[in-house]
Structure formats: structure tokens, C-alpha cells
Image (cartoon, rainbow, N blue to C red; front, side, top):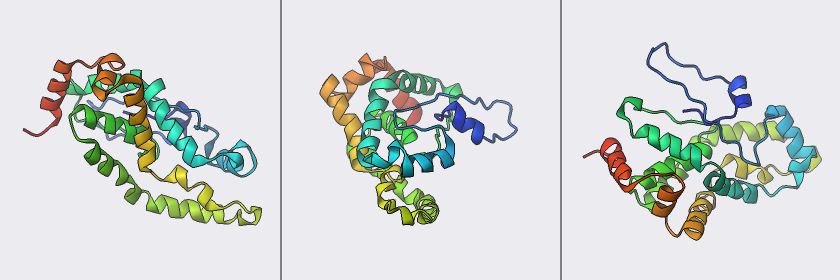
Length: 204
């Protein structure tokens, strides 16, 4: 289950093992922040273009609200696929594996009845997995220090924060009253299907 855009997949196509029954599905999530110009174009935007003026913490937080409002059909499709045992196991990924994937996995976990605190703890653990990537980007940006652009300005792009995921669920609570209502009204997930999902994905 590939949540990247077509441009991302062209630059870095998935390398699948030679197994016949693996099904590759492209379900792209492209929020307002997303830039398909590639690493070089993104760096130029961050340093010289519109990106230089952005508050990336706020922009990332807004992106999570977009997951709720603009991509519920995709979330529904993924969950409905998980209701069929023949589609499992299922690998869900994007590029960094922390934002698009992080939100969608959190939504599945919440649909399974896992507490918000446990889901948040799991989500925040992504920061432990991106430290090497952050260090690589820090070295890359070091060459631009003469432009007086602090690397710290861009770190919100490379981290997860509680406020990001919480913004998504705050929006759900505000607009729908509860997560169950959102799952039922926007994702079309019935109570019976939630029970089936629990029986399939949770250990007895």
C-alpha cells in the first residue's frame, strides 16, 4: 500500500520480492505542503522561494487536518481492504513513513479500540527511527549557513510532534463529535465491520 505520489514512486520505485501474490497498490496522498520537484527543488524553495517564509510546524500541523478532511475516502479504502483476510498481511508506507503512514496507521489503531495515549506513544516513537535521516539533512543544509537560514526552521518537516496528530483528532471531535461518528459517516465503517476488523487484526 503505497501512499506516495506518482512522482515520488518514479524517483524511487518499490523493489518487490519475486512473489506472485504480492499486490502493489498506489493510493497517493498529496497535501498542500507537498512538493514534487524533488530534493534539489525543495531545498531551493526552502531557501529562496515561498518555503523560506513558512512556519513549518504550523504547516505540518495543517497537513494532518487535511488527512482528515481530504483523504477520508482513501482511509476508508485501506480499512475496507484490511477487512478481507486474503489482503493480509498488508504493508503501508510513504516516503518517510511518519506522517501519511503515521496518521493512517493511527486511524486503524483507533478503529480497533486502542487508546489515544497508546496510539500517540507508538506514533511518537517514529522520532527514534528518523535520527539518521535528520543528521544527513543537517549536513546537507550546513553548506547554506552563509545564507543565515537556521536548520532548526526545517526540523518540523523531519520530526513528528504530538501536536500534529492531536490536531487531526481535535478536528474529528470538533466536526463530528466523536471518532466513531467520523468512522461511520465519512469512512462508511459500520459497527459490525469494526468488530470484524478487531477479530482479524487483534490477538485473541
